[in-house]
Image (tube, rainbow, N blue to C red; front, side):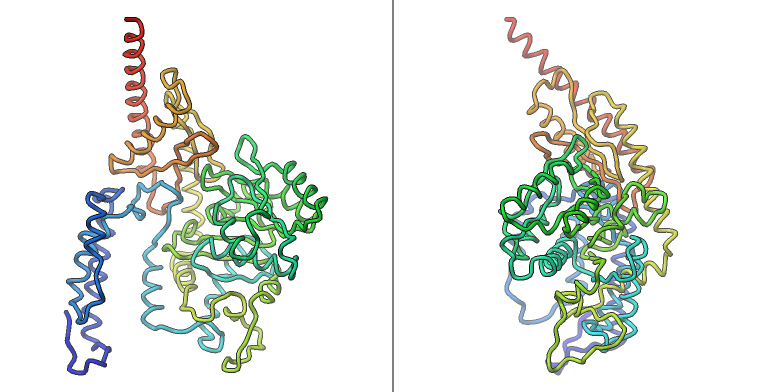
Length: 492
């Protein structure tokens, strides 16, 4: 399926060629999705270094058929990666990949409309504005809110920090101090540095026994910085940490931020979309009071990776940071949302179509049902895992993530417990049905289960619990056997 043109400068294809190419790609993609659960969830990494070296090549001088290009993609290279779309993927924070969003990307890329400024594609930009307004309404932010779609939470954080810095510090950036908890995502510190806030101006606040920011220590840190002549200007709360799923006391932090005149940002990249469900909003009390909010639709809305979002309560503050013009650009003085005036990108495609088309296709009610189910599955599984001999629960699910470790008299040191917990994650994953990962918090390694894939249903959770029980029993038996052997050796 490749035609060498007699005119080498002609890169266009006939309608028949494009149709055939599209049919081939859709057929391979749908077949791949239909067989997801038949593939190893961890991926085949045997000889991966050699494979990657063999893939290094110079740019080809002449073209190749589409079949020859996509066959190794689907047959060899894609399978050699984490099975993130798999129904048993409960590692890290699962991403999405709902099919309508893929179709939206295909439409956006083939029609190739420019949406950097409103005048270039007014109706399309309005659809993106609608999608941002839907996020705003679900999060119960005011009508003054404006936002933008980003590639993920990291860029949303960067824009939020830059916005707060511009409004509260002006040119006196060096005096500004920013506050995070010890469980805040590491991208915040990176984003702060990019926004001009050096690492020595980022204050790390300890957490309580539930891994939530301690507001008493936050208040003390703010007071100490003021006494030192510095300017506290921003504080971060997290609506679901990556390590343990903890939700900070957002309301209490909002009270402090209001009293101290700090910009309060809530990182809702993982957990923010649970706020869509009215019955779950008390779990995120205070979220709607934030000055700005990070959301990752590629998590809680099950979108493909690369779909982030930022909402800013004072939309004019976001506009003040980014507003600019040039002699060749149209002068937008109307009522409509203009993406380039609220974000750093002038050149951009049509990222909002993913959200708009998918929500219009499924409807918000189905999203609320799916999110409610993930929460229910996590609570059920956590209660079952807590019954497994040797499992100690470190964090019950505040949203849809819980954490635990393995412990027994035969695992009588922290190092032994950490090694056994790592082995528990690895052996369950090696079985190929469920993928789990852990996290180091302090000196302890915790096993984690995060339920947020739209494909994860009750059957996968039952398999997860069953395999955790089986592998835990085997590991404890091995530890007890080693202990007995050591005891016999010591008595001889």
